[in-house]
Amino acid sequence: MNQFIELRKEHATVITEIHSLAFPGFFLTELGKDVLCVFYSALIQDESTIVWGIKNNNELVGFFVASTSPFGLYTRIFKKHFFKFFLPLTISFLKNISFVGRMMTSVNSSKEFNVTKVFSVALLSICVSPSSSGKGIGKLLLGKLENELELKGKNGYYLTTDKENNVATNHFYLNNGFQLHRVFLQGNRIMNLYVKDLK
Image 1: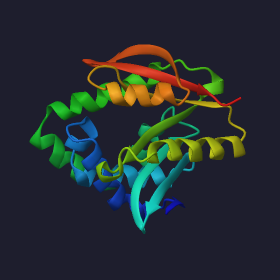
Image 2: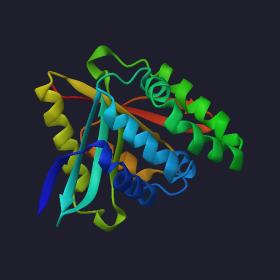
Image 3: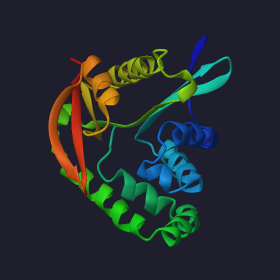
């Protein structure tokens, strides 16, 4: 039986494991589990974030992270948790110096989304364990997020995802009521920005 659970910083480790399994080869995953764990722990502790997961048979099988104040979020959490980020990021950068440029590109691109105030909330991450994919977990997570946003008086939200080699994900969002707002470049990646009106 599926059960929603509001996630805390102590869940960062299991969230990291699910993310790593669900998104192999993605930039955040390539930075390493130590970076990911600090990243999710910092996100959960930010006052703007809404973080819920789904448990099935007492096992976390999916989660989402959204922010009601996404602009400047990454800079904000990095400054606040600088010393926790420092060592794992340094190790990751020493292994692959190109990660520095890719991180800067990712952070800077988020300043150019140009969404209206109606869609000022960002869905930062939604992730389902591969062992639970195809069971409607993603749709349940979106429903939970939208219920939480309505309780907070929010009328819409946005998200970004890769345009190319990402057919299933793009279909998922379109089939769940999102509209393509714009296409933009993030370094060499072509990205789709979707919005959803909850009114």
